[in-house]
Length: 105
Image (cartoon, rainbow, N blue to C red; front, top):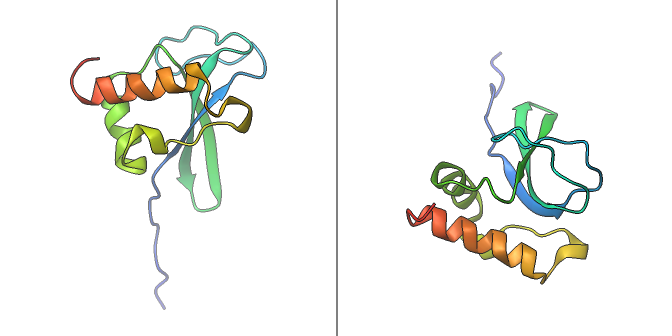
């Protein structure tokens, strides 16, 4: 009997504030300071397992923006941490995603 097999799932993205200053950006490798804006990437590893990767708000490039938009469609649809909703910082990251996807970043 054959199972359904391994099915890859897309990563999901969330704009949030860093709760500590211990994590590093996946791209630039600098520490993300406590309270700084970041993008959380929940990457699918295998069935039943995901891992959390992080990017600082300054490391939004065209390739990253394309991955985010492939999942969420538009930058405004990227979930924002509840305490961050409507903040200028969250909107800045959304604009950066839009700009990078248009070739501006």
